[in-house]
Structure formats: structure tokens, C-alpha cells
Length: 333
Image 1: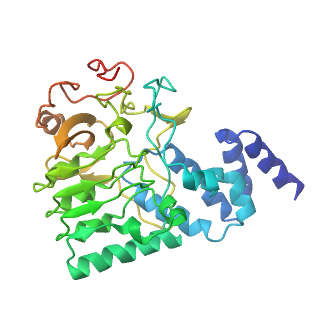
Image 2 (image 1 turned 90 degrees about the horizontal axis):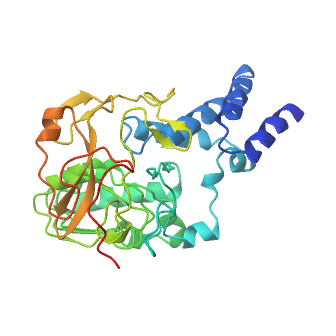
């Protein structure tokens, strides 16, 4: 259809042009084409931070819609989803130069990769979690059960890891993870945490501090925000701050099939609250054997004030990130 080819041509020419995508979504809606829902939700998720309260529901719905879309069409509207040899083999990213310490961009942004919850790799991961929960195993290393292609498709872990009450050792060596869910804090027996060489994992949720038995960690510290070697900047967490070049985070996602919610448990006190993004902060704390940049979703300034004091050599107080945050000098020559 010539008219649709024109829309797709405009998107292909400038994938970041949100206006062209929204106009195309309107055109699809007028024809009762469900792909309009995909375009809108894909756009919204690209602007939603990884800790958005509705992200999990949004990724489920987007994955459901994706199943009925033509691969050639997806290659245009969702080019980041194309699985190339380069993507499978590349385990790093360009957020900051880990080799020389030179920042590649003045403003860092959180990775907002969406997890495809309908792909075989994700379903296999869910099965592995259930198996580990059922047999009470003490070591959980799910990526060892997958090949390189499937490992590259996993960008987060499912919330069901909260069931792994007996797991003492969690190995995520060489993963493609960009985030870990706050439910990791419910792994009460966890003693060892090993995401070594997971170079796209730049931060952890504050809830990992709830793992009271955690004593050993092996993290690629040079890939962390604010690490002592290079001091890369922290992404800005102020309400309304862009989550990417020209992208503002939506308050709610355009969900139709999965029920989203704006509430979440406070990272500090655990009480449920409506997340209006007003009390999100970074804090650098020692977790096991590493100092990690932790993302806190607090319900109030009182809870922010209850956070532990960071160790010497790091930003001394909780902060909202951005390039204006003063960090101690880097220690790497």
C-alpha cells in the first residue's frame, strides 16, 4: 500500500522521529489495525525508564502484540529487536568508554531495552526458576543452560526469582542483562552474587541490600555508574527528566490487555505507594565485596533520609544524578 510505504519510509529514514510514528499509529487506528497499539506502546516503552512501575505489564503486552506482526514490518518499527551476529557477540555497550575512561556522551541514559516475554529464551528462563524453586537448589546459574543467542535475548530476570528462597549462589556470568528486578531482595538465603563480565549492567536495585546473608560478590566494577576507576556520571532521575535524547518518560503506559499499576513497594520501608517519581535517588553502598550504585524508589523524603551513609571515596549522600553531581577524583591513571 503506497500510503503505508510512505509512513514506513519516514520511520526508516529517522527512527527517532516520534511524530512520524504517532501519525502512523493514528492511520492504523483509523483502519482498526492492531499494529497501531504496537506502535504506541513500543514508543511509550522506549521512553519509560527501566524502573517504571508499569514496565513489566507493558513488556508483556508488547510481546503479545509482537507475535502477530510481520518480521519485515518489525524490522522497520523495532530495529533494535533484530538479532545480529554482532549483537550476540558484543557484550558491552557505548554508555561510557570502559577502556580509556572517556565519556562518550555528556548525558548518560538508563538502558530501556524491552524484554520479549514470548520468546523461547524467556519461557525457558521461567521454567528454570520454577525448577530451582521446586527442588530447593542452592546454586542458580540459568544462563549456563542456554546458548549464546538465547542468552543475548535475556535483558532482565523475572519477578519470580522471589521464589528462590534456598538459593545461596546466583551466577549471571557474561550476561546481556541491563537490569535486575527488585525481587532479588526476597532471595533471603543469597550469599554469593556473580554477574561478572555483564558489561551492560550499570546499576542494581536498592532492594539487593535486603539480602542479609550476602557476603561475596563478583561484579565488573568498571561497568558501574560512579565506579572508582573512571567515575562515569549517573543518569538524571529528576521527575520529567528525559530518559533518552528527546524522550520524556510517560506517567502511564497505553495498556489495553495487561493491567498496569502506578503503585509499588517503597525500596526502604516496603509500604505500597503511588510512584510519582519524586523520591528516586542514587546511593553508592557496599554490598558484599563491592560498592554498587543502587537505584532507590522511596515513598518519601523521610525514607530517603533513612538510607545508609555511602563509604569514603563515593558521593557522600543520596543524589538524583546528572552531570552536575560532584564525584571524587578517579583513581585509575
